[in-house]
Length: 268
View 1 (tube, one colour):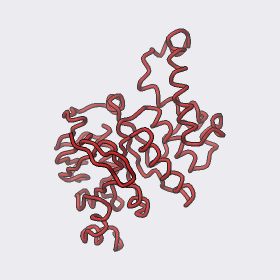
View 2 (cartoon, one colour):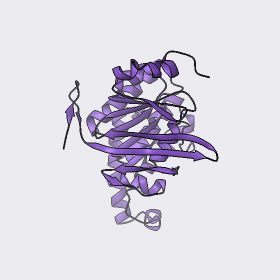
View 3 (cartoon, rainbow, N blue to C red):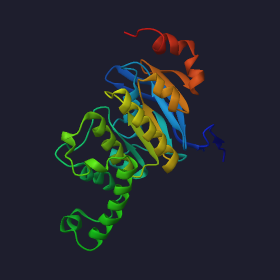
View 4 (tube, rainbow, N blue to C red):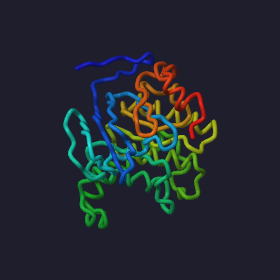
């Protein structure tokens, strides 16, 4: 077992997730071309690249929305067979989406509670009756959800329908719902898209705090390079479905192919 300690005192452990030689095709189009990288336990791992580079497709492969034609995925050192997203969620992988996927007519608390359903043992009938075991189980998860609400500082909107919330707060509620699933691996698809500077600063702080307090391993897609370079332990760079860079932020920042493809010039 190997581990390293980051400059801010966090511990990065062994490989938690490994994708090996992944290729994903849609008809004759290769969205992902023979990509390999790993994610170590406790780290914040960024995936960057221009629009259409294959970033969201890669997250969809990791959490089972897409099944690649070639390659293998290992989680906790075990090869993973083709599984449904619900099965992968029960293994400990949760995500947020590029386009917010909340129940707009439900309030914040109820939206976050849906993240617990993956782990609930009672049947739908028991939950509908809400008696005995179902009642006790809900109280346990309700306490966990209330802790998340306090942690993300959204106490004031607990009973507010999420459809009435500003965009930045909806993003925070979606993060809360993902955390309610108690993930070992958290996938964040553009968590700061559409936010103003203050909202981005808040989200950066929460991502770092989640990693520090809960030890949650995080993979995020983000276009704001300042954010990526500030909070990521390692960065993988995609371009037209190919991997063109992989390393710590300083290595990626100085990679000429990355500069040409993304950081330094316009990309059609």
